[in-house]
Amino acid sequence: MSYTPGPWHWWTPEQAAAADFGPYNGPVVVTDEADQWIICEVASGIEGDPEHANARLIAAAPDLLNALEQMVANAEVLERNLASFALVRARAAIARAKG
Image 1 (cartoon, helix red, strand yellow):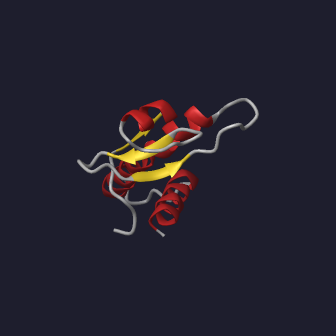
Image 2 (image 1 turned 90 degrees about the horizontal axis):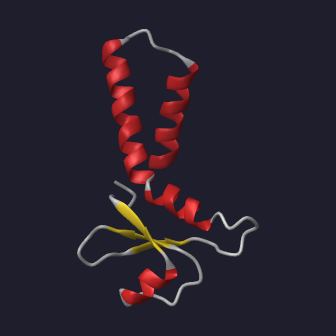
């Protein structure tokens, strides 16, 4: 596996500071491990302040990948002739996520 396994969570800068991380200007995404690694800091100050939504999306990445892999595996077992555009895109997204 070439990425840090999930689950991941996101923290506000204040939560990160309370956990002795930081200082950070924007939300951070952290692992669920006992030693909690920082995955990334999400840029802040973007017009419309989408940083919390971006942090939630990044934190959900391992779960989204797992769900997509399970969906593709189930589709391949249940519908052998599924060559739909959605399934092709799902496979491409998995490949992109896994490198």
